[in-house]
Length: 395
Ligand SMILES: Cc1ncc(COP(=O)(O)O)c(C=O)c1O
Ligand SMILES: Nc1c(O)cccc1C(=O)C[C@H](N)C(=O)O
Image 1 (cartoon, rainbow, N blue to C red):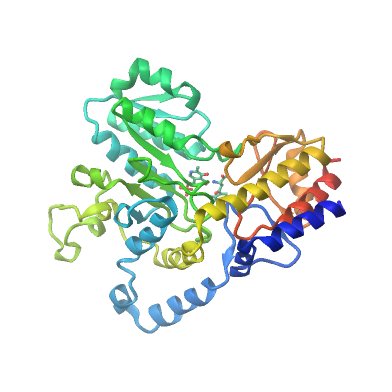
Image 2 (cartoon, rainbow, N blue to C red):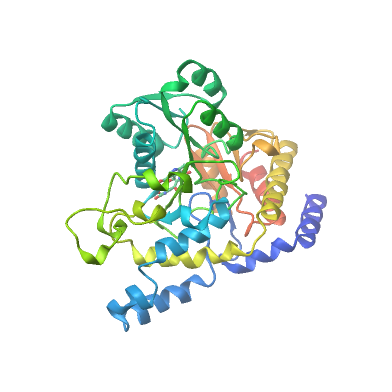
């Protein structure tokens, strides 16, 4: 595949974003295509964490809650996430896990639509989203409707007046399909429902435009395309217009208007800070806060263009050179996130053999070879290497 490699190298040389790879630490000889599960380590984060542990914790001790900016880190990191998802800085807080955040925003969202008794979710969602939505429905006495996006218009035409929240994932974790966030949000709004999006597989990979599209609620992982590290806290987003009436279903002292007054009754903090509950995992939170700096000066439209160029090349070369693999991810760039999913009857073995040759992807049930393409650190040359290895392991 010499001609393909020359073409890939030319594409990398012409793209200024190829230099972003230098902001990450990756082992030599490894093509890392699993950033949609665990993002790579930004090169500056070890030194930041070392300072947090040795100086801030070890020397400054408790004073670091104020002097080290620990107390306000959920909002500070939230404002950085806000830039990536197109929200206002006071609409995002980094807290808890994606599962817990989804619970919080779904319950809070349903309460913003009293009298409506249905919650809509996507049947193919990541399992935690389905479990959480079912639990919220159960607790609040709502009916859970599993409705594919293609059927949403018909569902809302029949039941829209009774739907409180429509909760979908922006990019499908298994297929890599990108849903029409503006269109589906508008449909929900036309029925008077709130829209809620799980951005785990889109934030940090492509522009989301939450405020532009009027999205009400969102959540997402900190450890995928945001590169916050294993177990990094997640974030939740609530549009400003809902802050006044917003109630946290897990109110805790860190979301109180005056936490250190230690009052016996609860009064929520301003804006989205009221969605905080207990003490955050400070080490993980500060790792994520630092990691977010990697993408703060990056033009998201350019990042998206690079991502589509990479995934487009991968789809094209697999189609041309590896006939045993069926491309599951939509070929239409407008419907593609930042991963390429390939079906193969021995997908699990293919993923194992790929890893043994230095190309790290992952397997998803039942038959999917999932290749995450994080545009900041994956190159076009990596794509060619991947296809060469795929030819070896899936002839
Ligand atoms: C769409 C989606 N939502 C949520 C999660 C995970 O949530 P949590 O961070 O609570 O484990 C994942 C991946 O693990 C995911 O892909
Ligand atoms: N969160 C994960 C974990 O704690 C262990 C292993 C994998 C994960 C993942 O993130 C899985 C991921 N959400 C997925 O899309 O499959």
